[in-house]
Image (cartoon, rainbow over all chains, first blue to last red; front, side, top):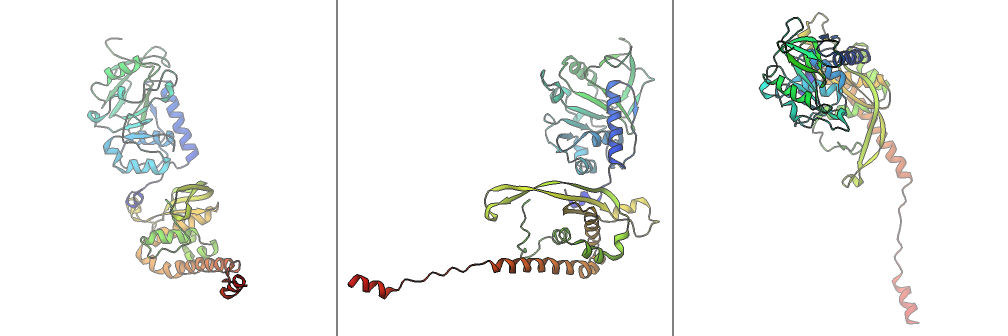
Length: 207
Length: 176
């Protein structure tokens, strides 16, 4: 690590054990109740770049054995140095090899397609990639999408702003590849929504 | 990274690397004494002291193939010094230097003090003071250790002497 990056480094979790447990709880909650907005407990110091909830989620989930790929703007910012310092995770330059991906807000055109990421295999579907996507806002009151699938009793409404325009088509494709496919977390600065590959996304008028 | 510790580098290319190596080998009393009032400061932790294992690698003869020598216990930490004036607002925190330490063993206090010293040494004003008060005694200590080990090793040295065969005696045998 460069001395310069070290100079602007900030601390991670205030309490490593409790902090990472809280993040695991949020990740578990988000993936078992797709579409529900979960508020991330913010008991850590955060880098200047990147959404707080996304940074915390990765800080809790990554370790030295998990590879991560970040959007260009994040990879060159203090967020990458911070994540590497605290988790020891190797950063890869090819998104197709990464186990975790951190996609920066506002650069949807540069995001790699979901279909190009690690999909796992039929024997090992767990070896697929997990995507943390930064979005502008999340709402459950305005029903742009209707979600259905395991973990949702009847249906769950969700509106997301800041996703790639063809995300819904990509997601339909991803859902169709079950048991293979990637899992996605959508993150605002403070909230997280889980979208496991089992979730169907419909437009509100279709449902 | 492979580094030889016992052979003094001809010219320390990086002064920070030199003092970090010194601090890592410093005995605790010398550190406490050299840092004086700085030992009581409460740092802002970036990484609390944590103990783990590291694989030590060597090269045959210092230049041959790399091989794993064995694992050793290492304690590391990173901290930022508390600002001199407590009233300093948050953004100024970024300006105080960050200290890092990797030390052998499980002594968290040693790691903390080495990191505090590393942070202090990065400010030129403190460097001038600590160079005299901390680094000079440490250099002497490390040097003394090396001299002692060298002297110990010297007592086991055997100088083999090859006695040259007497040229004349051999000739006599042959002639008789």
